[in-house]
Amino acid sequence: MKTVFEKSVKGRCGVMPAALDVERYDFDADRLRDGLVLPELSEPEVAAHYTALSKRTFGVDDGFYPLGSCTMKYNPKLNEEIAALPGFRDAHPLARADKMQGSLAVIDTLSAYLAGITGMDAVSLQPCAGAHGEFTAMLMVHAYHRSRGDEGRTKVLIPDSAHGTNPASAAMAGFEVVTLASAPDGSIDLADLRLKVGEDTAALMLTNPSTLGKFEKHVLEVADIVHEAGGLMYYDGANLNAVMGVVRPGDMGFDLVHLNLHKTFSAPHGGGGPGAGPVCCKAELAAFLPDPQVVRDKKGFRFGRSDWSVGRVSAFYGNFGVCLKALAYIVTLGGKGLRAAAETAVLNANYLREKISYFYPVGEGRCMHEFVLSMRKLRDETGVTALDVAKGLIDRGIHPPTMYFPLIVEDALMFEPTETASKETLDAAAAALKEIVDLAYTDPAALHSAPHNTPVGRPDEAGAARNPVVKG
Ligand SMILES: *Cc1c(COP(=O)(O)O)cnc(C)c1O
Image 1 (tube, rainbow, N blue to C red):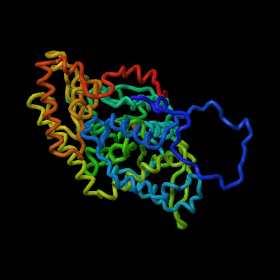
Image 2 (image 1 turned 120 degrees about the horizontal axis):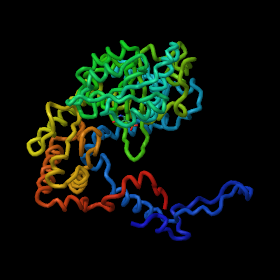
Image 3 (image 1 turned 60 degrees about the horizontal axis):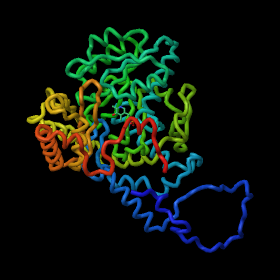
Image 4 (image 1 turned 30 degrees about the vertical axis):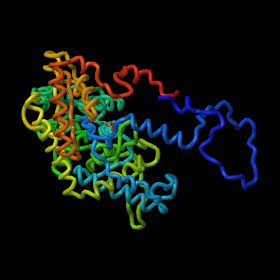
């Protein structure tokens, strides 16, 4: 397909500007830019170009998107309408607080809901992604220990099944990362924890349920061990979709949490779109949250500041539009609805897992909202890898699951169907997987060469990430 630049025809135009009805103003020559090449096309050509491009990709609105750990649930369009209401959309971030009471009420209301859902006391909506929330929370952990004169806490404990952003965030905040081993069932190895925890422990970062889709059954004991040593418990909330409305991180012994509004709370994401990674914390840590905080007094909402704050972590107040979508979602579902969403997400994952377990063994016991398959046996017997299976799914209209993660599972494929997949969709996915496994034994070459219906088949992914070519 040609780029818009290749389709450009000199002098063609998509708009007809109205005749000038004000006095002409000529800029000084040094203010004018020359040499800027822009494509010249008519409006129908632009519409056709971008519509064609949009059909060559795959998004949540195209079909099943079981990308593990990313919670690619359907995003209700109502949320977009709410976020686009002119009073919110056109609000100026530098407007005075007394002119912005509605927007500040949104921040205050969403914060209160998130505190309720997580069992925490205070919230900042500023961080713009999960990883950004992790980093903010690690800065708070650092500030908390320093405020108590406890300078020797330099280490953060992180299980080996964790998302890569956990060690990255801890390291960026200046901590040394200590990796904890997993027991064979995927839970934390308590003996290893006891060995590594100590007076130098600043915090433990835990994802629960873990990226293996297992609930950490020793979580209360883990929290006791870490707290007794003087460390803080940090909850990576990326998997909250499995437990919201059922259990709360605050009741599991956690002190700080980040949430991914763009996963659990239905803001569209992927392709680098805007997200939000609010940080919620217990009262003892509230003073360290990013500034400014929305506070309420007799005259209404205003911005408050704390001497202990880690400071601002993003321009203005975070991705406000994403926060509006999350608030619309929470208010639409209500408490019972959120719980039902989590329960259905877990049911869907177990249904799919059971359906494929008869032709593909997938480990012991029930899962939470996601599960991990190892393609090791298939690879050893047929030469077909996890990557080949993922590419085969693309040919069958299904977005690939997360691949080669978590790192502790060989040839991993991680499926997260979410609550918005129907039974028919799950049945079709199980049938597609069965077809692929059968094909692996009869015609493995057909999978090595998949996908067959996409403009690009097997890009050099590492090369694309290291040396991206982002312009024509
Ligand atoms: C997605 C995810 C993150 C990071 O969140 P981003 O919003 O992508 O920065 C962290 N931990 C886990 C377990 C995740 O799935």
